[in-house]
Length: 381
Image: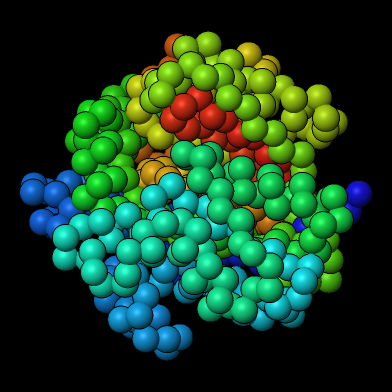
């Protein structure tokens, strides 16, 4: 079976339009979560991490006509194009596949002012994926993965499996989601939104902060395609479903524990740090702490990136994996922004300050509505 390498990546969030720009802001302790006022999204002010529309419009204008593409599509195209720049990847090669990870896609096209703007089909995830496919001239039909908040991690696991099986040589994965009236009102109906910037794992946490982002990670069997001298391998990955509840996580952490445990049984690697889902909701953080403790990893350093750019849904697993890979390449453990005091019944080794040390392996985990869970390993070669 082929090794799977990370050839290139990109992150677009409120903290920047490149991975490096995001990293610099995160290392400086900056957050993109702000109090926002946008009557198109909510009647009253709300906390969220939003991408600058003027910068997005300006950047996309250098690529194509912004009036022909939705906000979601512009974000996806910009991120993919950035990740592809400087590589020798041929999108039209039959050995190259495109995977789109998203939970809501062009959901804002359901709103009355946008309903007739692009045609009714663009609301479907497959339609948006095909538009992006045609833009980059991908030869193969795109794959869409929409499995709640594990979509991004599951997309990486899927891409790696396809390469190991010898079906494709290169898989370009993009994860994108936007903050819209539909998304914000949905989470608000669960009473799961924080009254300020989210505080993962903290004793005073009171909910999540939403964010929008587009992230791209390119997997390949060809190590020569990697833009970085530091080779990063995509290791084993597993998904599970505990079918506990449509929105509530398992109180025993069963599904996530099974995913982590299966991964640990398949790899002899010692885990140097864990990139958690860490939404800052009372139940998610507690569930993760139980699952991690059951797996015997309670002493392994753990962080959550949600305090920097919020919960970005279908993009979360991609951009958090990219930043975890950045940590491996640069030997840095990034602190959990918003965390001050342990708020878990099963204490974890939460990373509360920026730490520079030699690290080799990272476990990335994610959980989502409907009881879905995912775990994947990233390793420095």
